[in-house]
Length: 268
Image (cartoon, rainbow, N blue to C red; front, top):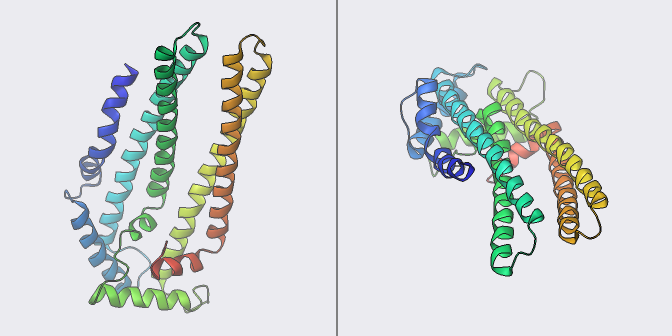
């Protein structure tokens, strides 16, 4: 059942978000090329409006993108839960098995490792899509062509870069659109920082549990002890990685303008 759910959720993650987001946001069905075109035109109109509130066209694109990421986050979270359950079953089977030959033990260990790796990928997908759902405008900005050859978009992006290169925090001189973009970009990084810190805490707890289980396991059961130690070491490394990720994003969230300027200058 768990394998069947995994086989169904993977294609659902790829193909279902677009149609479901279209229904949820009452938008027309769009492919990526059409979405970029809509975003480019509506972003130019928003910048030229001089208003803080999003224009109707840009709001529609942002609403669609938010729904798109909500659907993907829910599917990815479901897939993560399924993979965790499947991984636990496989690792338990491997630990408890006695007298396995290489022909049977290696495939079981390989399947357990693959499922664990897929669970990590699913976790990353959950985090990325939560980030996109809570800060959809910044997520959308990553899709803008940063060096269009000419036209209204090129002029608008040039003006954005100029405003960010000036002092975007200067009172009375900051265009409302810049305030919105900088605020959303800051939230974009706060979300991933909080998510990374949460994961680090949970994984640290799993690391402690793994080391305790390795100590409590009888010395005669060498396979179980090795697996618990490997999990403890791996969990520690993963936890440290997420702590570094959280710190980096907190740093960007506190000073978002330089990072935004770097993005609009051609990087991210």
